[in-house]
Length: 193
Ligand code: ITT
Image (cartoon, rainbow, N blue to C red; front, top):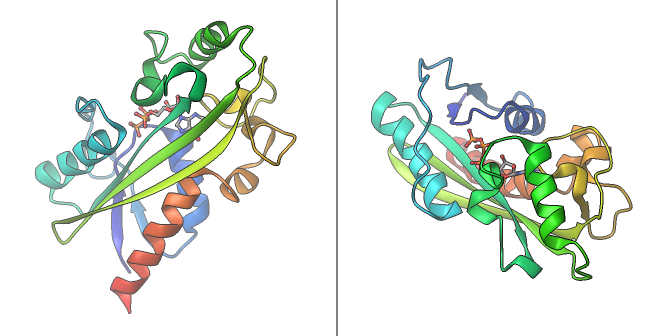
């Protein structure tokens, strides 16, 4: 069975991805491989940061691995917070990040946004990237207590609940992360055949 390290320090991402992967692959955490440092994310793009995180683990630990870099892109804010999603307010505090976002959008009727994820897989030293997106709307106030990050203010198009009002399974039925992961699983399954 393929063993892969998921290069993330975000426990919610780990939960979502583990839930979708089930028992098809063996997932190791950064802690499992003895990686305790903050992974580099300095490229300025989601695609570049995703590559940086996976490359770091492959280069320093020689472990087949994958990383996820993701972000929320809001149309009326020219794609902000984007690559800065995790630290938008200057801290990693999700409530403060949401507060800043809602303030910037106050009075704006264009609430269109999308979540984007880029996975980078490094297998046998070769790199592959997989992208997932979901479009939706930013609400005027938070709703729900599940999920993480901007989930309480993001309502996917066609839904009447935010990601924070959904179970992990429901969110995984449509999210940017699950769409990217579905592509990565299809690729991995071909390697096993
Ligand atoms: P790792 O780099 O350790 O994986 P991180 O939280 O720093 O964890 P990112 O650098 O990819 O992850 O930042 C993504 C940020 O975008 C994340 O902290 C959230 O604020 C937001 N985000 C990404 N996916 C999200 C989701 O599914 N729901 C809500 N917010 C999300």
